[in-house]
Length: 224
Image (tube, rainbow, N blue to C red; front, side, top):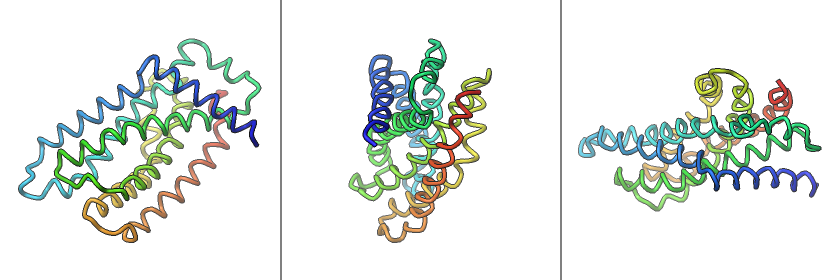
């Protein structure tokens, strides 16, 4: 058990160190997410209450589409430097490569969400103390990373990778995005976490489904 976990952490550590040197993924996600939120901030009039209805969608549009930019770079360095073949040939099960990459994708997305969400709440005049929102963000980000890592591997060998990734990935993510928006809306309204329980259940169920399915499919995806 310790050896597989150590291999996953080794792949995760490699991606983190690479990102710390290049800052390609975090920078792209963060800038896009912040720009999206700022634009929407000026698009709505806070006095008429319309922003309260649109706010959950604004947050998740910013995070999801910014995340797509980051996922386009997830395998790009290995592909550009011809290191992907070496990674595949390593004495590491392909499922462990998936889990290492998925954990890296989750950490990058979650780190950006931790920075962007307080700015979003402050700009739109919501309370900054919403601990239940962290649960929603974690569950939705797990599903996003699970699906995104798989489709990033599938799309990396296509010429139109930047276009194909969102086309393939976003329809599959619809249940997670709907549950994330609905539960975020309830949290922003100040409702107790119990009111969001059905949406949280949906996110947990789809997270498990996505993780199992992606783990089983990833070997075929990466070897194509």
